[in-house]
Image 1 (cartoon, rainbow, N blue to C red):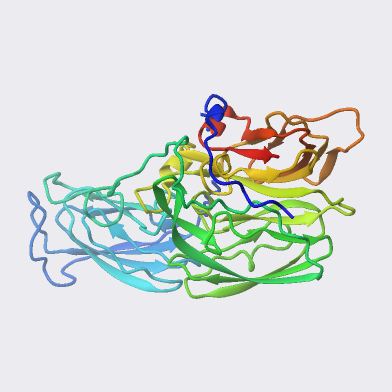
Image 2 (cartoon, helix red, strand yellow):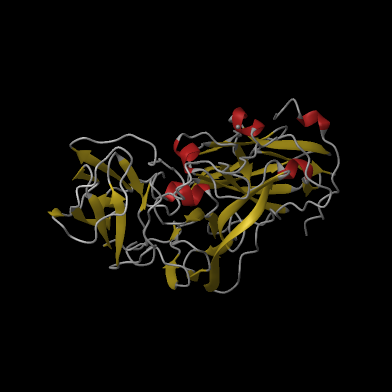
Length: 460
């Protein structure tokens, strides 16, 4: 049995060592027609400053489909009142928000909403305000023909609330060398025991939660089961997994298990809040496999905590003295206690790189071992953007299993120093640490080690 982690203690000598899919799917779909109606609807009460109201109303049919508005650009005569009839032909919920503050309710598939945009006298931006949708391309531009005004009264607002402040709230910063509070408990990195049954059933709840991700830094994470990463699942080749996904969140979410091979259309579809679906697959290949949210933009959902690992044991996997699971991922901070920022994800500018969801947690709560123990490290790189280069300082790997293939076994003449993994890749390494001491482990992409991708194995 693993020892209880040692109490927090200073590890000052580590300072010099480690002080670093966006699959936005575009569907080219049907456009919508606009027609100009003379005298339709009541006359507007007031016009944008500097623009004379024409007394006419332009009504435009807009369709939301494929994470796009169709048409994406509307032109109306300056001074006309604009009415937008929004129909959602997508499988996901959407809304339409204008930079003037006008907005529709959030509508589901096949629903329609009517938006009175008022008198149009200048260019106005529009977008879907659901998290990540605007950045994924759900934008709309309203322009005018004839004399137009750029006078006050029209604002451009990036957060969808009409207040003109795109980044309301304080965005915290991470000190990767800071010490957690005295009561901090690290995530248990011990690998789950391989179950004896051949069918594994789990209710997996989507939860949007507030969590500390670094000392003094809290974020709203989108999670499977309330943690990022989600629970580690384990089985053998031939085992069947029956996962019931239950959306307890406020957004639509889905799931994709790399450990199974099946058509994604139905089991990986997004589900709305309050809905559930059953995802059933049989494991046919060994390895440590990623699972993650399948909802666009996947970059945002993965980058904000929706990922986890499934271990499928290779046949004949030998027992070891210690077995740990480390999932590398990145943090992209939003405002304090808010979701992560998609723009910095798209720019590939992480605020931290971590193992098991928290900055340098195992530097402060080391993983225990005894001298001479055979230790197996399962490592998954959840990304979404950075490569991992797992290395134990002072150790050498005599076993390497990477992406379903044995690359090194005990008794081979050679050894290995690093397990390199691109995003979504995984494997395991084994080592025997010969004597007592503190053995740091890092991603040897050193800027990421300094961003928090580091820890310690405390050998006694």
